[in-house]
Amino acid sequence: MYLISVQPSVNVPYFLLIVEFQQVSHQIIFSNIIIMKIVNITHSPLKTKRFRIYLDNNKHYDFGLKTGQTYIDHKDKTKRHNYQMRHYNLKREQPFIQNLIPSPALFSYFILWGESSDIMKNIKSLNKLLKTVTPK
Image (cartoon, rainbow, N blue to C red; front, side, top):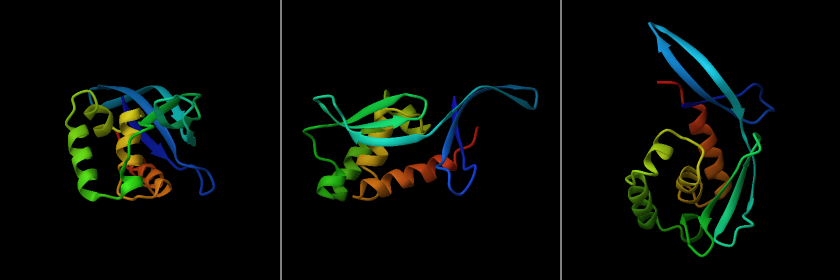
């Protein structure tokens, strides 16, 4: 499964296509296309989670420890680097981060521990990154 994004018009947010495909000879056959976009981020109703992100396919993901501090809180670049290295190397999280698959691991990595200490800038950066993904 791969993520592709398109921007249908200037006034419409980025869309993500999750595409399952198989290669037959030199042709790619696309099937099971699901169009999806991030539509909202709020505080999570779960006691242990900090944020909930909503997608337009009626899925949501809760992520971030409610009691923990992240780069958006402390702005410590060394802690950010250590978090990113530690979580990117976890077998259970790496595929989600590396392949940009919507998951708590992906959203924590790019939104809470992203390049900026501004959560909205990190969401915008993640959308730009998702826009550049193409099938391999």
